[in-house]
Structures are given as C-alpha cells and as structure tokens.
Image (cartoon, rainbow, N blue to C red; front, side, top):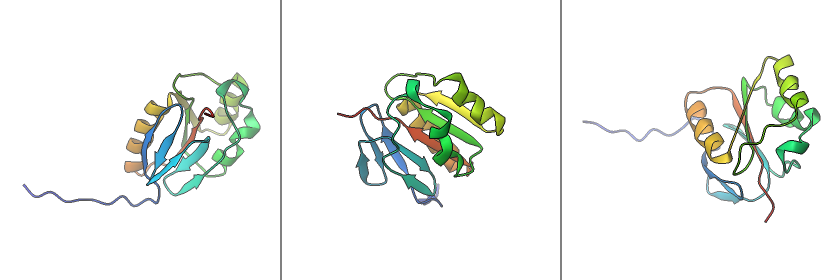
Length: 125
C-alpha cells in the first residue's frame, strides 16, 4: 500500500479549539477570531453569543462563505434570532456549536474545499 502525505491547498489549518484557546497553524490564540481556509482575522471583538448583533457578522460575510460556523465556547449558545435571520436573508447557512465541534466541522469542510468561514468565541482568561 502506498501512502502519500498530502499537503492542504489552504493557508490556515485549525489544529484545536476549546472555550479558552485555539491553535491555528503553529500559533495559540486566546481572543475571539475569524477563520477561513485562506484568512485569519484576529481579535474579533465579540466575546459571547448572547450579545452578538447582525453587524458583528460583517467581517465573516465579507469572506463570501457558503456556510458560517459559530463556535460559542465550551457550551453551545444560540445567538439572537436577528443574527440567524441576517444569514438566512443572504442564503448563507449558520451553524452554532461548541468550539470543539466547530473545529472538527471546519477541518472537514475545508478539506472538501467548501467555502466555510468560522467565528470562534473565546472567553478571556
């Protein structure tokens, strides 16, 4: 059996994420951030899902995703209905899950060359 090490065709690889930190490529992040396979936006000012407003999605929507993954920390916490509606009006899926689940989902969708963008909410230490 021949095994080949296949390198991804994207710039950013999400290695792990929980409620406190995430590892992107070889860096550890401790503040909320936005990630696509081709772009990392650090220091996203959103800290919790309950206070998320539709305008907070602008940097995610600017990356032209098919689907947005919202990692809400250690627990799944749905944002206000207006946030969900803002995505639906543009025909973009919004999936809300824990950071660990969002990380796993992001890895799968990125490996399938899907237009995925993820916002990860990290609690300050």
